[in-house]
Amino acid sequence: MVGFVLSPGRGGHLAKRGLSVCASGSGNGVAKVPEPRRAEVHRVTGETEVYVSVNVDGTGVCDSQTGIPFLDHMIHQLSSHGLLDIKIEAKGDYHIDDHHTNEDVGISLGMALAKALGDKRGIRRFGHFAAPLDEALVEIVLDFSGRPYLAYGLNIPTERVGTYDTQLVREFYAAVASNAQMTLHIRQLDGINSHHIIEASFKAFARAMRMALEHDSRRLGTVPSSKGVLTDEQALSAQSVKEA
Ligand SMILES: [Mn+2]
Image: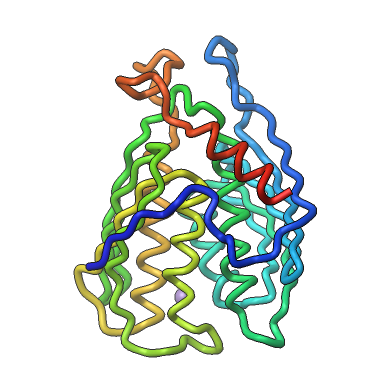
């Protein structure tokens, strides 16, 4: 397994311009009926244009049109098993390959999650799940710590699933972890079929996120950190400035 530290706001090889972000409903911890945690990101670069909306308190409604069919299939796993409402519209420089669009969808989804969660009051913070898909078994352990880190342990035996380059799985997870400010460990416990291994990882990721992001009533709306802070606001705002 290879671990590496991600710098917040990664994605610097892309020429960024035209970033806009809005968020609502992060809550103040005293509302009787918490507002749904939603955010939108519209991100435009010289290589891609990506729109993402996320409702963390959703019911699993998904409309993903990334132009990359296998990635859409995986986004549907996140939505369905994470009970996240996700809408994605993306277009990019597919004539080169799917790399930029795949990564920028991950960046935008991670940014939308970070914006929707705000200061992360009341969440459980940690999540873990091990999901099987036939012979494949993948475990995800994650922490919405404010500290981007990815330990990626998938060994996918084929270069492609359909038209999807399986190297892009790692790129997608790295982009989400970096921009959602998440510590993310992915362990493959078993598996032979590439489609099964990847899909098991997304199912486990979805359920682990659901565990981490659900409301912890005993938290009483406080930030689940002994330091009192779980969001690197400086990194988030620096990213917005850098990418604007
Ligand atoms: Mn499948």
